[in-house]
Image 1 (cartoon, rainbow, N blue to C red):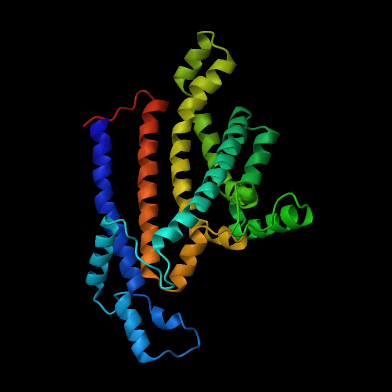
Image 2 (spheres, rainbow, N blue to C red):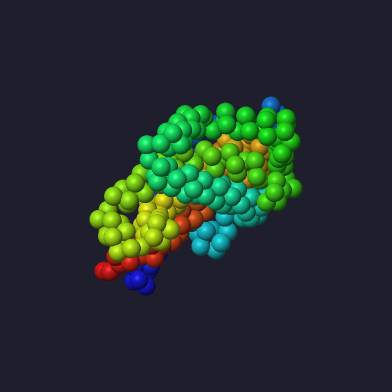
Length: 309
């Protein structure tokens, strides 16, 4: 197991270099002058523009800029935004907000998927099962921004159950409404996956053997069926977590969540290469670590899975 973990950690290195190189190249190749865009409609002097380009190394070739960025990462220096802020400080301020939002959305989706997906599998072919499948299809078909606006209007403005917007000062309670929207947006696919996985597991020979040995339904379902059905669910959670860490830009914008998605979107508009690449670098590391944790959980859920050389 230790050798497997070390191999996976070593595999992070080429993934890290490849992801940062690709993102850096894409941002570098974007049209427009990011320094001139800072002044808006104002026309700064050519000398000031040249000084700022030299300060942020924008006058250097692509490979020089990229190597300088990598050298800074090794010193735990993520660079400076064009507004003068440290990228590390921006990341430290926004990352916990998105992390809380992603964790809350994953918990909501996971609980709903297990409860409703499991009930649909056990009640396959009934009215309840068909109704849950139709509702899941509706959630899949509705775009996330439509779901966000509806939740904001009805749950936040009309019923006033939640705060319609988040703002700079926020805690766990302020994030409930965007977390519910994100949780329901990924719930439908997760619920269908749980249902199909449990139906497949219920048809296995060893489940019928467990019943023939006299084990009760209350023992077979949670211990034998649900446990083995969780393996695809764990993979789905890891994928959704990675998506939510970077893909919640629309939701964060609608609910004014000061997270990494909203900040990353603004940085892309301003062509802030250090901010964009640093954020993506952290996303790559988080995504790889989450998938490593998932691989280790496989061995706990299914004793037949062993990682050997």
